[in-house]
Image 1 (tube, rainbow, N blue to C red):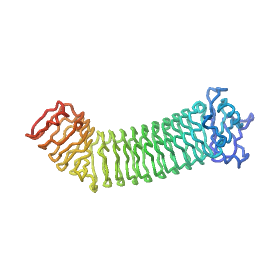
Image 2 (cartoon, helix red, strand yellow):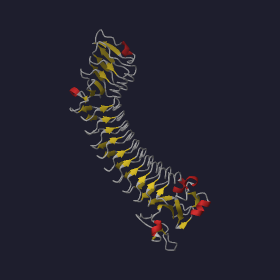
Image 3 (cartoon, rainbow, N blue to C red):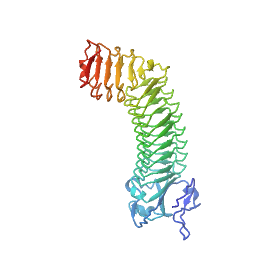
Image 4 (cartoon, helix red, strand yellow):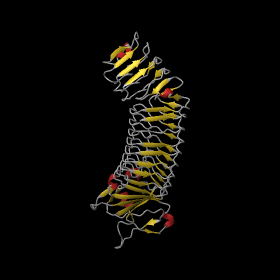
Length: 459
């Protein structure tokens, strides 16, 4: 199938009406150039392999969209059919291998103009957008039959939800005139496998590509300075990503649910990693946090179950108790020696908050130093590889869910005569049978309610 060639600038369209005309190709004449170069155009190529003729199709959202102050005209195969459409409530008779050209007065595609027109786009092989400055919010939303679109280099912004739920959209060309991609612009475009963001784009809106489950790769240029929250949430096919040095923060939920993500490079300008930023990135095995990062948010690496090692740079000043919650494969935890807020003293394979001597994150290879006073909430949450632990007599309290889901933990030795304070969830769902070893003369009766069927021994 031949398609309409891409034109960067052009005047008016005149589809030749002669026996020599190839119906798959649009031709151009230079008529009335000044007048028509001011008009934005959307060109839709109608085609259908079964050659169904005479079908009435809706080509605009009638009640919401037809505003003559915005729409200049609509042409079918070079003929003005605006009046026909007005008289027929937005309907037109389908003809195979024809081009519909929408002309807009203000060089913008109005909000929701093509929204929900699935029947129309089921007869479409290609759409081109030319001499348009802004693609409005919801412009092509829910056009689930749309497969391919080319955007001319006059477009500067793609509006919120512009192509949301275009679930059959396989390819789109974004020109280097575009500076912003709006919130949810390509949300749930599940057939997109790759997309190239030009180096003119400075911002990617929140949820811009969320639930694009077919997306395996995306290159973010160093022109981008901000990436909105949930921008790539549940892009479950995404394998690798690089955050350029121009970006200063990774927002909340940015890569949440990217279950195939194996590697990520974080630029040296990033100062914060937001809440849930990499939650459920189950294929991520390692991550290098640059020395520019000062804070890591709640559940940032929640259930990154393949993550085996983490190194906390000396720039970090804030880590939440549940940052690495459920990272069951962790084997190595290192805090850089120069960090003033956290440490991994005595090579303990833990993160310890220095000012309070609270152990906030451990792993299956951890030991608890004698200087630690408390185990924080979720300290060993989900460490299924942990089989035994010794708790020194310096520890006076153990936080909520500290050993939650440590399903293979079968031995706990605690050296304090006074049982550290716990709550009913501290040992929830640990190994069903094990041994608690405590000093002779101590009283750990309040622990036993959480250690059902465990054996109690004195040491």
